[in-house]
Length: 405
Length: 140
Ligand SMILES: Cc1ncc(COP(=O)(O)O)c(C=O)c1O
Image 1 (cartoon, helix red, strand yellow):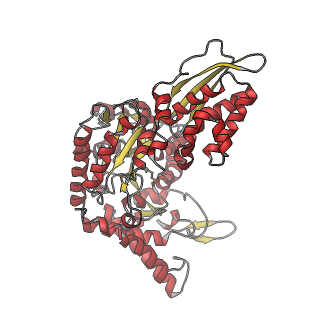
Image 2: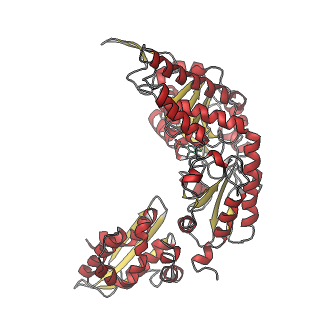
Image 3: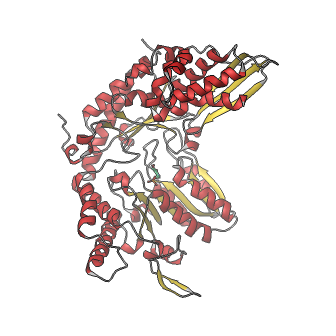
């Protein structure tokens, strides 16, 4: 029997029993989220923002209420500053295409880090190429820390935009966003934060962080797939041209001239994922009800158990900080003479699900001089039994491959 | 599917003690095969005589146990054979990995038959065929 009182909220563990240790890729969903999506389609389904009849009004209200809840979840001043997208990737691309490509000039500098997920790297490579700006990368030490020197040298009066991940999806470390933002703002640069891996694990306050843009995905914090969020500072959003054009984002259209709708609808062309947003709000309520302190406690205890278990082998090496409390539920590791894909296949035979590969962070893998890694990530529904099974089997992988007897 | 049926003696033996890892003296053909999603990377070298016999071969590079063992087993099978026969074996191996091979084909593949259960591991198919695919490109 599990000692985890939240596990029963997640139907997947009943219908497909498994040791799920890949929550950093996507979380499992509690029943309340699945039910919310169903409730929307059963009781308020109509095309929001379009119709004049009661049902459509209901759909619109549900959608806009979800926007309000999302705004207050991350500390945005106004729901107008919340744009619903498909995911973090789309949110970051929106900023690159609508902001960076229009307001950054040749000779300006864009600063990001080698630690970023490809989603927070490729859009800036594209923006730099398009605008003639120079792209610089902050380089961390082995444990994922950026030195003050690195920050001070690379962020300066040429800097126009800084894009940084809040929590690394490989090392699990929290980046000093506030410090980086303060430095960037001193030179009038805009700060973009990738919150895909922080929002599931900690209370975020975008004002406190100093984020001018903040992106995250619903599916990583137990919301549905296909709904993501972009927060943008009002004055920036107002001066940006739309990302996509079409239905639902205009004030008036004639054959000669189009007047765009006000924010946030200017950035939400076409029929929106209203059911997704409605269910995302349910996920946010669930997260709040459990509480981030509780989540942190579970994660830290489980990560510590992994650290203890892995200490029994001299062949397993954990990436990033040596302190289990600095991992936000993420443990990436390598094993001597073993390719991570063999680790994940061997674990999979016992229904233990982990990730193996470069985790969409190839530049970081190269920087750390590891080809690829295995990654286990825990969340609030994991229990000690999960970790026991995982550690036990992982310690046997080298034996399975004939490397040990 | 049991784990032993893939990570068994044949695969482990070829992974840990590859027979054909290294360089081929007097190689006439060389090609790099890459599997970008995994980071598997091999360089295959062959020495093919004028009459089309594969006289020698080797591989270099790195990757998972399945990709490494698979290419070593492949070289065992094709060295001493003609190009045509090697391509026939490639065809049989591809059939096997996609779960479409006949009993006879699997028999014909000899030790490579030990990899047949990879047909039940979709995520690993690319690893198993990397060497074979590279060979096919080289000989065609
Ligand atoms: C740090 C980070 N940024 C961005 C993403 C991309 O998220 P999505 O695939 O939901 O767009 C991920 C998810 O893998 C991530 O971990």
